[in-house]
Image (tube, rainbow, N blue to C red; front, side):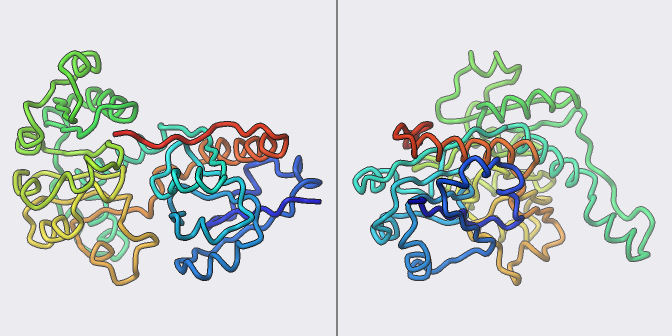
Length: 323
């Protein structure tokens, strides 16, 4: 008998194009959902007979309340090796294996720089003016060379962002709760005396932290008030690290120069959300990981995860983040 499997939130119909699902056609009854569903009741009804689910990042949360309503679920495959929207403890109690996939950190690194450069040179404003026949040269760009880039987080992604910043001739500061002078020096950056010192000194602040109990709300109204009025904030990590109401207020009142955003509290972002119209926001719809190489890794590994599960030996178990 074939196992029922559903792939969720495949907005771009990419899953079947980037994974060799033909290897499983004799073993799986495969369905793909291209629409996003918010209702837990609707999800529970649609997925009640599924043995295997494949989910894209954190688009649909799987809390205990939903997992408990999926009596036949035995394998949950998530793209990436971390997923804060899955209750891993509940999954374990319910006998549901959770497997992950590989992923490349280069994609969000590249998008970070796309947003930072776009903000510095006012690409949105200038492009809109160019297309509408508006003023020719209406803004003055902000320089990178000689300016200070402050990195909140100096892990794999933050370290590569710092490397590129040095190539632009920027001064690089970094801070996180556990960052040491030795580790900062190894990455060729200076350890900020504190989070507050980094915010006050930086011309560009970029967030590269994992969302956890310690980092949720790390930047609130008080912290944003420390930034220069000419400074920009870039967040390609997780929206919850920055107090969104405080950020919107700072942007509306122009207490900071602008923000480059790829992550949001609610995704897809509502059509009437202020981020869609604020002139000092350069935003993308959470495309930091959306590249050919990442999709290929995600879905090739998802097929492998399912094959291993069906053979009785699940692989790539996702572990809770202890941060």
